[in-house]
Image (cartoon, rainbow, N blue to C red; front, side, top):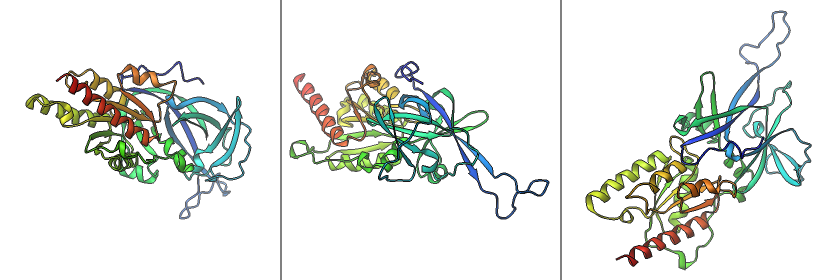
Length: 337
């Protein structure tokens, strides 16, 4: 399945989700063992859970490939690697990574090949259903219980008429399997220290929010974090009102907006579009910091007016380029005085 023909226009606050499922073995209860009417043990039950991933991250869906084992793996869920048109791609058993056991009579699994954070990874799943086109407003953040039992792997919940789809944070899976792909901040050097620039950061992952806060504070930023684009927009509208009442510029309150793209309620593309079409906020530098920043998808950020786009996990580049944008805005303002 090719993804290039079904991607949505930027700024619509919509996404397309590939729905897939994982079949899980459910052991019989020890309190009341299951038996058939003829007295023979029943076949162990299985449970089918439904999950989703943004279609923008999916390169294609293929049948189970021939896999070659790797000499060393970080986790038993890494089944090995396979050759796909001269690209060597690791294959992860997603059910195993989530701590699930495959049923004995499972059908032929499918493989979802993904690309994000400039890394290509494949995930083995039980099957694929369809693609759903939905609004980000339909995506609810997981409650604390769902987040806890999924080890914070579920980043969104979509309620359909007959089932619930859990949107998975596949970036976390990949980062856990290869810690070198996680967020990190290299030495910026003295030339890149700043004196209290203020950044507003929007990301739906609590872990990423706190890591970005910590890493950007080390670079000298004062950081305020919010969990989605709607919360960021509400905060910016409050700042806009204060600017209009006091006659002060936006830069007196915030110097840069850093936003993820995939977020419940309002995504980063819609947020950027709102900022750049607002007569008060339009000069605020906006950086999209997302695993979806690839050569194929960069045009989406450009179309809504993003000042810069950086692929996770390049936090050092984020800090440097945020300061460069802020200083460029300061020079422009000074030149017009």
